[in-house]
Structures are given as C-alpha cells and as structure tokens.
Amino acid sequence: MTPRVTLAIAVRVLTQLRRDHRTLAMLLLVPCLLQALLWWIFWDQPLVFDRIGPALLAIFPFFVMFLVTSITTLRERSGGTLERLFTMPMGRLDFLVGYALAFGAIAAVQAALAAGVAVGLLDLDLRGPDVLLVLVGVVDAVLGTALGLFVSAFARTEFQAVQFLPAIVVPQILLCGLIVPRDRLPRVLERIADVMPLTWAVDAMEHLATTARTGAVWRDLGIVVAFAVAALALGAATLRRRTE
Amino acid sequence: MSPVSAVEIAGLRVVRGGTAVIDGLDLTIGAGVTGLLGPSGCGKSTLLRSIAGVQRVAAGTVTVLGEPAGSAALRDRVGYQTQSSSVYDDLAVLENLRFFARVLGLPPAAAEAALASVDLTGQGGVVVGRLSGGQRSRVGLAVALLGSPALLVLDEPTVGLDPVLRRDLWALFHRVADTGTAVLVSSHVMDEAERCDTLLLMREGRIIADGAPGEIKAAQGVADIESAFLALVEGRGIA
Image 1 (tube, each protein chain N blue to C red):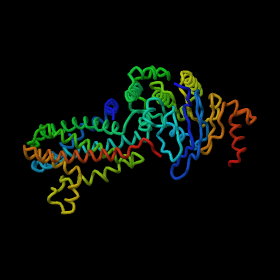
Image 2: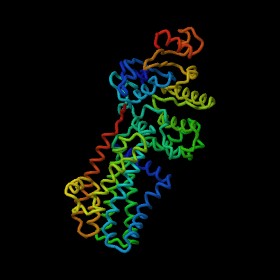
Image 3: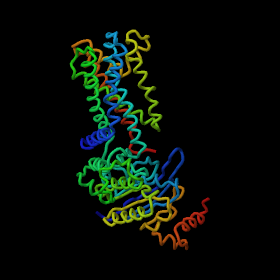
Image 4: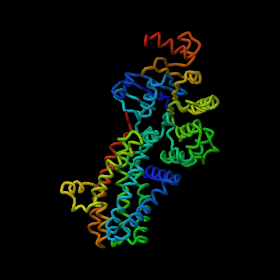
C-alpha cells in the first residue's frame, strides 16, 4: 500500500461525486428528508420516533454506501479502469482503503447533517456525545462500503448489483431492532441478529440516545469495526490483478 | 539500456471458460511499431492482456523488458490500454490524466504533456462522457503514454475511427516508437497492416506470420496482406 496512491484514489472518487450533483444531493439530503417523514408519521407518538430515530441514523449510511459502492466498483471492473490501475503501481489495499476513505468522508457529513436535523429540528432525544454519533455513522458507512466492494465481485451487471440490496441489506434492517426490539424477536432470529453487523451499529445509536455513558457504545463500535475490517479483507480477496 | 527484446514469450497457454484460447505460443517482439492483426475472437486481447500482466496464465513464460510480465518493476514502464478506453466518463479529461499521473508518481505537468501528444490540449476541461468516440479513445491513449513507458500495449485503439484520425494516430505511434518505446498495437482491420514496421498475423490463438509487411507478402507471392492471410490459412490447411 502506498499513501500517495490511496489518497489519489480517495480524491478521485470525491471528484467524481462532486461532478455528480444529483447523487451528492441524494446522499446528503435524502436521509434528512426520511427522518422528517418518520417524525411526521409519528407526530402524535413522539416516544416511537425517539425509539426509531436513532436506528435510522445507523441504517442510512450503511444502506446508501453499500448501494453506491457496489455500483461504482462494478463500473470500475466492467469499464476497464480497474484493469488499467492494476497495470500501474496500485495495490489492492490502495483501492479498497481509497474508496473507504472517500465514502467515510461523505458519511461523516451525512451523519452530521442527519443527526443535526434529527436533534435540532425534530427534537430527537440524544444523551451521548455528538462526536461519537458521527463516528458510529462513519464506521457504519465504511462497513457498507466494504460489503458493497465485496458483493460487486459477484455481479456482472448494475441490475444484478442492485439485487444484492434486498438480499444482504434488507434482512439486516428487518432484524436490527427497528421493527421489533431484538429481545422480543423469536429466539432463533435474535441469535441471527446477533451476528449481523448492522445490529451493533443500531445498538450503538440506541445507547447514545438513552444514556450519557459511552462504555456500551465503544463496545458496539469495536464490533462494527471488526465486521468492517473482515468485509474489507473479503473485498481484497475478490480483487485480483490477474483475471480469466 | 541494452537492446533486449521488448517481449519474449515461451510456451504460453491461456485457458478461458474451459477452452485453451492460446496453446503453446512462442513469440519475440522487438522495437518499432508492431501490429497484431487477426479476426475478432482470435486471441489478440488475451495475448495483450498476458503481456500487460492482467491475464491469468495456465502455462509458459511472458518476459517484458527482461522482467516477468506484471511484476512490480514494470508497473511504471508499460503503458496499457484496453479495448474500452479505460478512463472515467464522469471526470474531465485533465482530471483523468492527473489522477493516473498521481498513481504513477508523476508531476501534474506530465498530464499536460500527455494531453498535448494526442492533440487534445484544448479539451482538458471537458468531461470525457461528452467527447466523441475518437476523442475518448485518445484520452485513453494519453493515459497509456503517461511517463513515457518503454512498452506501449494498445488493444484496438483505432477501431471505428475516421480515416484521418486513424492516419494521425498511426503517425503518433511511429513518433512514440522513434523515441525508443516499443509499440504493440492490435487491430482486426487488415488495411492497417501496411502502417506497421513488423506484423504479427494471428488466427485461432496462433501466430501464423511474423515479419515486415513486405516480407510476408513476398513470401506468399501476393499483393496485399488480406491475400497473404488467406494464402497462409489455406496453405496450412486450417478450416
């Protein structure tokens, strides 16, 4: 891995996003708008919004970055740019970490905006430190990016890549505690939820909402980081300099 | 640098999707502009990818500039362009070049120099997706030219371009070759044969002729390369 190359890739990905105003606007504004929508749906039940709001702060970065990364990486594979980069002094980690850095930076802005709207405008109750909330959002986004990189290896078209969303992301959303609190899930489903990374990101956000103590948040964050590193390793395994 | 051959291939075997696309190929490529000509699907791209070091190889050795193909020492000495231009459509021309220059560890000025060499100086700020096919192909070529590589591997860079542009590009290949870079260009258009210093005719994964265009025509006693190709194919009894 060469810092010069890693950084070049991160800057290039951000430049591509900067040129694509529509995508950038969707990345940053849609999470805020969806938060507002939910607040509206539960306007006469603020307790429900207080329960769901934090979970959403964890779900957005993961969901969006998974989708964006799986499509952009697929484009790199099919457009020949990845192959060209592999004939240059670029390591696999330069590529993976470059993407993670770029989308991590976007996620930081996204998390700060979404949390700002939720807390400032929609009266979501948050007790933990704001910085930690943004940090959970970033790690969560890096997890989405890493998983997106990994699954892009198994899709041949953008159409197929999008299908991984219901297959890999939606089950995690259903089981993470958003719909039914985890301890009220059937036993087997609760166990399955325990080994899904999004569960721990949501758990971290819920702790931030309910208590000022940060011990459990750091533990959850550690688990999400471990998942993200594992997903990056899997992603690295699918990036081959030589292909058939 | 000693005048070693740019590429030396011995016993190359490549298997794709269960069938051997190239089986037991031996080849030496030297200086100047070498054209790799053959019909679509004959294995040209596979051969070029093997030389660029991105093709999984079943057997044999590919040596480029004295090093195994794809080795770390070659990463800034071989310029490679795939069939699909291999540039980012959503970035401006100069943004593409500056990005690849940074990956190669070159100063930003290298990007401007590469742009000038393909006659696109005025187009630096234009997003690649808005360019014509020919201009896009030239951006890809400019990326391959970054840092004056010792070997240039170009997969069908002139396909679908108008005759004036094709002539200009072949002139560029010769200018690049005159600076000491070995240039390897593939094409399935037989009339491009006359523009090469050395010609490799390929069919069904084999090199059926290797020499100057004039020599190949004289050996078959024909007036053009297309006839030479036919004579070679029929002479060898390949259906």
